[in-house]
Length: 255
Ligand code: ATP
Image (cartoon, rainbow, N blue to C red; front, side, top):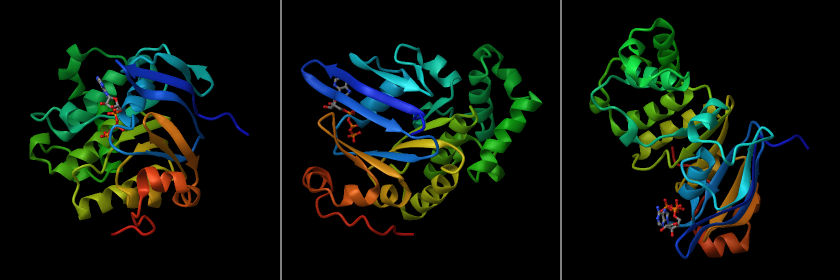
């Protein structure tokens, strides 16, 4: 089998007496959309934060494309092609959508934030920003202030910000959170397109979205991976049903 793009091996993270990541091992194959699901407090965000380098593991290792990145700081991982869709709170509300993406592209390319003034004018950055905005369907909203974008548009902008760094692995932490029915249907459509271009790890509570999008699903409960497999295997797994899915109907997606 080809080497996985991401290999997590025996990862451990504690918070005091809580084992938030309990010897987690998982592989993400290049080209797949790999969903991570589990109840509140299962350790999903903690895992993502260790992948990005924002939280140090207490044990285990993380390899990206065969390279051990376990001890690399976040900006080095970003330079290697790992991007996290940051929460809306990291967007700059008084700047336009295009400025936000241009800043992300500039920061990724190793320039200093001091030159942000230039980033807004620099033609190459403007073009990259426009392309990323077009990619998420926000082309016509490029010059609108973030504070004037709808919640759904801000989530799409987060994706554009992540895409501007040209990632090989995109980590998405609850991109559907807070979205209405129409907006989440748009997000599912967008992710179904993006998955053809970039490998995605998706943490999400919207099970209809997860089962519509995922090639494989790993289930975290109390920091442990209790199951990993294709959607049909997860849906049919008794332990997963007991621990998480219960009687949820996850076969069809509302649109
Ligand atoms: P949710 O679905 O609600 O977002 P999650 O699966 O992302 O939950 P985490 O937020 O990773 O779960 O939390 C895992 C466990 O670690 C929880 O018990 C949580 O209380 C604990 N935890 C997370 N971050 C911290 C922290 N900074 N300090 C102390 N405990 C923490």
